[in-house]
Image (cartoon, rainbow over all chains, first blue to last red; front, side):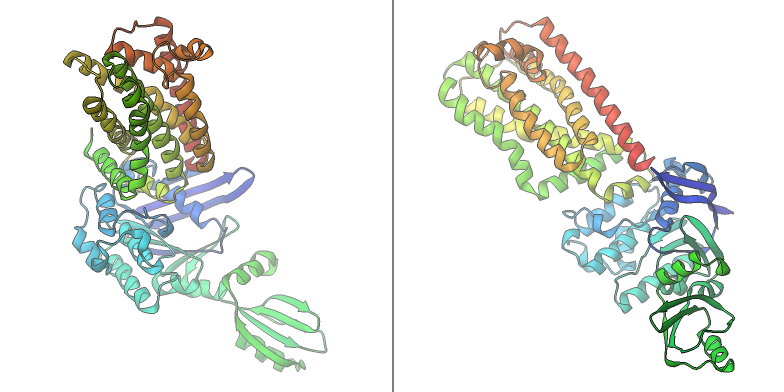
Length: 292
Length: 246
């Protein structure tokens, strides 16, 4: 059963085309990561699927209906931006407010307990730390016993322990048959949870594949070296940048590249291998036709 | 009224009362004006005190609605909480109804001191029938001001809404003759007042609590204002929905 679907969806804001003919679907029980740098169109796609916005072209569907129809959202859970929680309301009150909208919500204590918020019940959300607010935001997505949740960077900014326990919570929900769509611009967060990753860049789907395949695509290394001679043709090279006498090579497989350099007898010194940020990887991918 | 509307109203009221100065603020001016202008000057005159109380009630209705909706709605629109609430399985109706209920509650908070001061510190008197009429008229005249506040709140960003509400509120109060007894305002105000929303509203109040004659054109222009504010509010609401959520 398809639980969320976008068919050839485009969305325009004024002159900007935020989404450009995107096809995307999530089956019941899947745990899908939506990966992309800032401005890639992740939030726009999610906002269309949860009924906050309407597509300019194309069709979106949630739980078999139009997401803008409240009935289609009865088993939907969404994380609010934690900066937007009503500052003067207490944790327990915010939870009760959200629960009141669902036909069969979790009890307040169950939810507090599951997300480690029990001690914070009387605290006003304005006085919580960033991590506590994030936990509350994620908890709110689960308040109505959803069948599908959309989590937006759920663990960014959490300490290791809090992140682990949150990941465990999401896994437990998935193990019971829940569907999860996770957006992030950190590969690590998505790797920890999702099997399938959809990569968005410049409003298009760049890849829709397993975590392993996508790591090969965007988990690139930057190999920097200084060489007195021009480089020969090397396999697996995504891009080459020259800064004065330094060469910066982007590749998915640094080991193979270094071996090839040695095999070709290229003289080099000051070899450095660094992981790249997702932003760098995307920039390279979307600018070099060879990699597309 | 659905229970969800009550839920929305309940939490909005909790939010408001957690910042008591906002509540005290809206109750302060009408009560302070009663004590400063009505009680010492016309407090012993049953007829004038009654009219003056009716003016202050109109003043409180205007100012609370202008601020509650004009500023409150534009503040809400600026919060990222608002789009989240839209993902909950409920339409716009309960939220809207909740907002109106909250506004009515705030109006009660602003009006109660005015009525109590009139009862205990002035000679103002009303028969039971007049009191009931006055309550009904108060509810009726709040409609144009609620719509006016909504039009401001939905069409302007937060900072602009604050300024516009503050700029409008004094000229409306003064120009509508709320600061002076019936027939006692400066000439140009007397000419203009019946056709301002505040002037139209206060004339209905005066007619409800005393022998003030009903003025047809004044009442008709109040109906006209109500229609205009309703159209503006609906237009601003739709435009806002389209912009933010289309």
